[in-house]
Length: 94
Image 1 (spheres, rainbow, N blue to C red):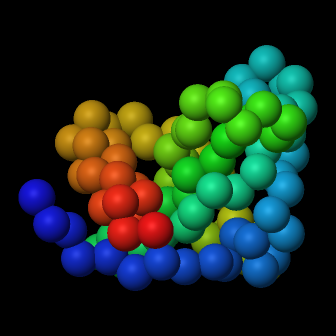
Image 2 (image 1 turned 90 degrees about the vertical axis):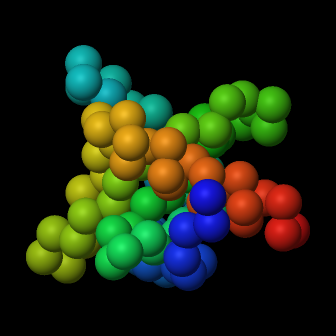
């Protein structure tokens, strides 16, 4: 599968490479942006917990919201697989 995508940087441009997100319990989690990409006009970001380069990366959907963004989990398995495949393509290219 070769998805058409483009690398983006809206989240990084708006907030820098480090983000603080709240989990479902209201606890702050510190992340570093690994990469951002757009697939079919949908923005995604791959984030890693800050401070541990060996930590697993997490894939999020990024939705514009006024002057900012909402970062949300990708719940749909097909959508997640498609975005994860694009991330693998980006990693293999670099």
